[in-house]
Length: 287
Image (cartoon, rainbow, N blue to C red; front, side, top):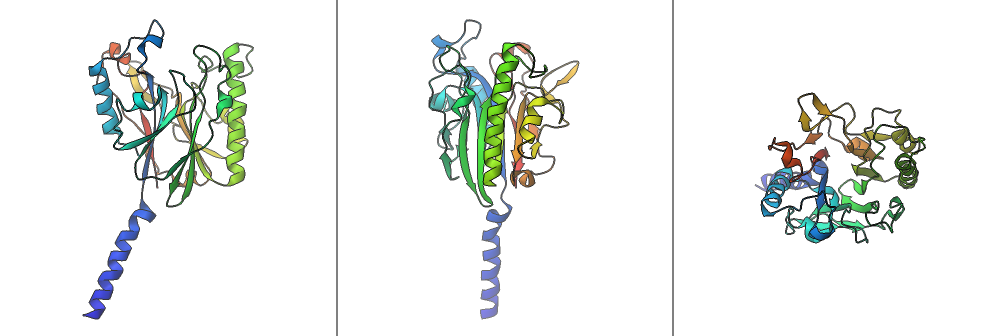
């Protein structure tokens, strides 16, 4: 009898240890396109969302079911709470007052600390529609800390070389150097890390100047490599990704193979892009 009890106790101990050793985290990124409660501050060509629009977005957020969601173009915790359940998620946003902000929603139960903003990414902090700071957090996992950076880089240099003598490409080149410094710091620490968000850059391959500058500081795995973006695909086919998830350090080994997913909207009417978002959520799983 005693032997049976001991075996049962050992079996239970092994079962309870499984979540710590084999747990998965769903890591996602979503640019929700001008999600704000301050409709008076929207540009003239942006239509404020109504309750129905927010309900649709909330439904997609629930279906996404991310453990950690990097956000872009969200106006702080109150706006995030309109589509993400605050009973399920804690929100983290940078110390700025812009309508468009990066941020994170992290499932309650995960231990998180917010690090100083990567404020240098906002090259024009005094502009009416300034560029965006990076939101920097650390999530404690069973395998060690995971440092995460949510970014939304300058638009207008999707394909051109960063050395082009135009304002947008010069700005992206400056932001790239700032990101490279952040990557170098994480590499020195030896920590698992990821950069997620809207890069506004169709990275064609490892020779892309932005990616090459980052990988010069540390090896990176780009989850979107080799895939096309099915979000709002036209009859001509899918588009190239401008949203990316870059994994560095031990996080590269945590990536579950073939786990990249894009949650495509069921609505097909092109007019719905303004009511939902011109970006779809993308996600990977880390084990």
